[in-house]
Length: 119
Ligand SMILES: [Zn+2]
Image (tube, rainbow, N blue to C red):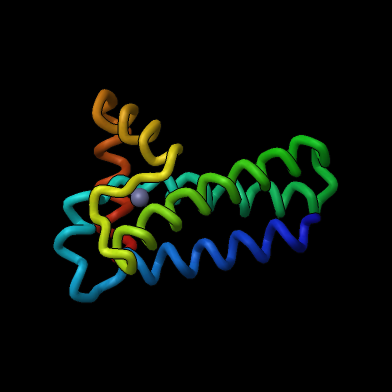
């Protein structure tokens, strides 16, 4: 199960980075630059690391899979926006994150800061 989670996380991360990377759709995607993947990826890494250390193994698996789901939702959102050319599409977690993003100034500031570092 760990291997499957890590494989899915790597695939989702690759799709996410390819979708938000430079290219013709960059302008539209920057406009919709709300990325909970920035929080899903550290959950995956923390869960995998804790599992490897044997630190709270059950909780580590929960963290790992939670991160995979968050990362996959953001990757699917931006993959559909970019390659299916539906800039308004949002996955279910992306909608929830968008609500928090709109209401929480520190979350918005952190997201924008991470966005400028990764692109
Ligand atoms: Zn996003």
